[in-house]
Image 1 (tube, rainbow, N blue to C red):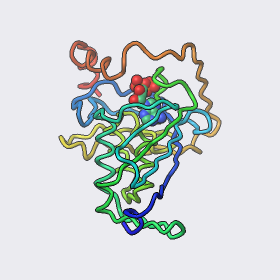
Image 2 (image 1 turned 135 degrees about the vertical axis):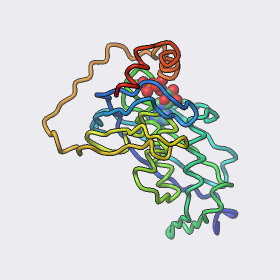
Image 3 (image 1 turned 30 degrees about the horizontal axis):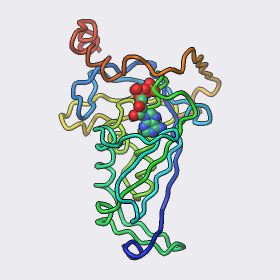
Length: 240
Ligand code: ADP
């Protein structure tokens, strides 16, 4: 970390990620911590010009802790979803060099550096339009860019999944399948692209926002209730 001890430098990366809408829905987890689903799901990724999250990640030796702002308000990063993604990306961080600014960060230094993250959604947050999908994939992707992470999209989708299940599908455009996988560690629970965004060029999705209020039941608790109490959900998972 050549310049890191000395300076007041800041290094930043910005990314934008779209949301996705399920055509075969993910509903129900078989592992809550790793976010492993009880069924495969398929979605279509929206145009990022329409519904997307834009996230800027900054790192500086002057930041004493990791912090995050969502739509201009500070939110806690202490929840499992953000911590899992941060941990998995930090683990894969590589050397970074910015010659113009004279900054060199060695991969082992990432564990000591903290990040500030600011994200904005251009559509209502937590209102049922999958802001968590756009937000968490953008979080992983932009952190990965900043930290020079070399993993392929499949691996990144598996990290985004640990932030929000459906986020893994937003890593690709077009039609995307989230394969539920069989492994207990979730290594095969990843997204694959079925058809790219040019495949069905004249497909138009119309979204009518009837309320932008925060939804009353979060997806996490709704899924938990369904897994515990719905015989229909069990039937669906078994008969796929
Ligand atoms: P939605 O239906 O919009 O996905 P959820 O309640 O499932 O609603 O998820 C909303 C949560 O997702 C937010 O409270 C926040 O924790 C997270 N989230 C939403 N947008 C972003 C974003 N741009 N960056 C990071 N996290 C986000």
